[in-house]
Length: 371
Image (cartoon, rainbow, N blue to C red; front, side):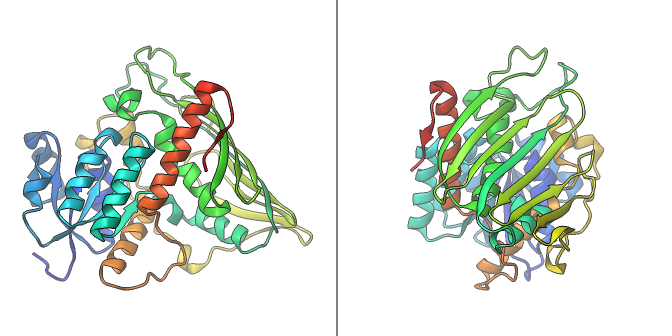
């Protein structure tokens, strides 16, 4: 055992295995254990990554008091049990998004974390993605003046084969599945981190995938929002839209606009541009925002579903390593070097309120105040 590294346990053998394990190691943690529902399957998946302990009981793993961090990457309906177990054991926690079933459950976890005095973060790793972080710096730095309007669109092709396996929870609304929670939670967090809290939303949820009649969760959404500061915005996304990938982000302000110039394919190089009174120009990437290139997950036998393929491309490992790096700094009593900050459970409660409000708006066909 390397005693110079803080020790962590990962809960979840899908995204947790593909991304958390690699990012924790890149951030200087020792991954001491992984926890899954089925002990034999967990051990089989842990072995190629040389994780020393596989278990089906987080409580038993946490009898080892040298483990100081728990990361939770289970399906969202199972977050609360793992998070509360970690908090009750006095461990610091990073929990995936969507954070909970609803805002009440999110507040339960947030309040418990506050009462216990532990460090807590939500897995909004794309706050540390190079282009998103640079775009935020441009906007909050005042380059385009006061933000007036925000637009983000993301239409990806997917699920062309109706027999393509997805994780069962992904398509089940009762288990917290759906594209709104899985991807919308990222989009909303990035918009709020840049523009401030949403005051109200109007949303439409749809299920448009072909040949998947068993699906009860959404795979497309259109959301309008207003922030407390007065910015209006529109966020549109679809998981299963045939044809080319279409994605873009643009913020128009009182002095100009800033946007992300995207390529034709996911993973193509992206650039941040500004147009104002001085004309159009590409914004240079500061050295502290340069992430290493993605490294695909190396063990093909563990990649079994379309979701697995999304999560094994490696694009989220470098920003996640920065998130875990902030956790490591805070555990050591240090302030992080980067000005970007990880989302906390306080942000997670807000995120859940936004998700709840969008779902309520889609049902009621009305604008919903978030408060």
